[in-house]
Length: 567
Ligand SMILES: Cc1cc2nc3c(=O)[nH]c(=O)nc-3n(C[C@H](O)[C@H](O)[C@H](O)COP(=O)(O)OP(=O)(O)OC[C@H]3O[C@@H](n4cnc5c(N)ncnc54)[C@H](O)[C@@H]3O)c2cc1C
Image (cartoon, rainbow, N blue to C red; front, side, top):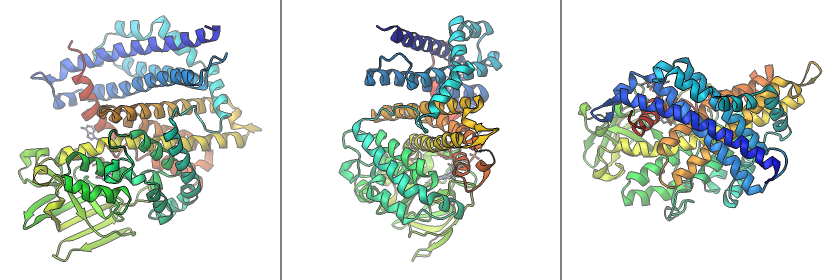
């Protein structure tokens, strides 16, 4: 073994050891939270609410620790795949080691702010996270010189942050959709944003032609997915590339068919699958998701829109809001209360496929022959433009029996079908965040190299190099974390991890696009500069597909606590 590979091995070993120490502390935190939030042998959601800050921080810290672990695995894989025995660290090694130190530092800061509340002693914290080896590893990785050198190195790569490690099939998908993003989406994205236009056919037809709407639909129903196994990686790679072109005008097109097809595959009758999936797969019918209501968003189980039985079907009455693409869509996935007994909570909800004509404008009104009405009005937003998100009113809107998801068996199961759809939406949203970060990072690097301030390019200043290094490390970690969870989901697991990766990447995208804008100075704030759009677009990622607080408190923390050891 060469001296160098010894050195790499040693550094990787130090990082592994430091992450083990972090995990040991997080295990203590979770075990402690478990002992405080159990009721009758079960983890109680109400009791977790008594410890919201601790639960949120534990969820976020666990997400960071997982991302760090996946980064180390990734760096090792790159080394193996490239057979690299050179004398210097790979870029991927350097990014992984630096990201580990950043993650440890941030978790340590969080825990040491209030160890008592986390149920850990200062002695334990010091012994684990302030040990000579952990401190030594972090100090060397976080040294200014190390970070600035990394920043200089990434600056030379024109926005690339290391190998993607895709197989040939996914590499080909990436190449195809990068071309679509560069040649079709990017030239139109600015105008769509500035004029708040609906996505034009030039983009829609490309996306349809390339089969994007069928990415999560099995081949037997006309989609691109193998009948044997899910291929989340395909969906992730395509989403990432389209979002690099534009979040609102391309990258989010796949979210809706992703949610709807997962809900259909989970709960639809065979006839419903046969009827809807082939049409959705080829984009013959576009869809939208109408779950959120004016009074209920995060609390999905509390939705109120009423579905009343009538001859041959159901009458929908009430309001939905934020229904993205609701005008253009030919079918809406509507969550409605089929049982008026509110004490049933989520068990009173069912899912409907409500058909309607498609509209391009910012408002529409559709009257059914029988007198039912559906009206919609787009909500003006700061970003995420191209699809239009509608508030909608259903007035005795008729939906036939055959459009109740799952048929009579599906009555009362709408909440579960919604959740099945949302887990796909979450990993897809992580991929959207990566695409957005990638393009913001590319612009930041390019501007930093071109812009002269006080006589030299801003990329030559230490502070800019540090910024770029951190952006690169967080971007690479977000990507590899998302890929790892996508692969896990291919095996039928990973629902909680999908929430974790969504929480982490979306928060990261908000910060990273802010940094990209900041590097542009005043020009970053100009509407004509794309980074101003990336910044406002990124802001929505932590709100929809499960707001970050809801994911942390209602999905991630309860799952982690449930699996924690008993104290
Ligand atoms: C641009 C855009 C597009 C969207 N597209 C769609 C769509 O296509 N279909 C659809 O159905 N919905 C869509 N949504 C809605 C989105 O899913 C909701 O906004 C989201 O679920 C949050 O719900 P809310 O807005 O009602 O916030 P609320 O539920 O009112 O929450 C407000 C704040 O309180 C926090 N919070 C919630 N619970 C707790 C708690 N227990 N403790 C502490 N804090 C808490 C939340 O995290 C949030 O920060 C979209 C939203 C936006 C902005």
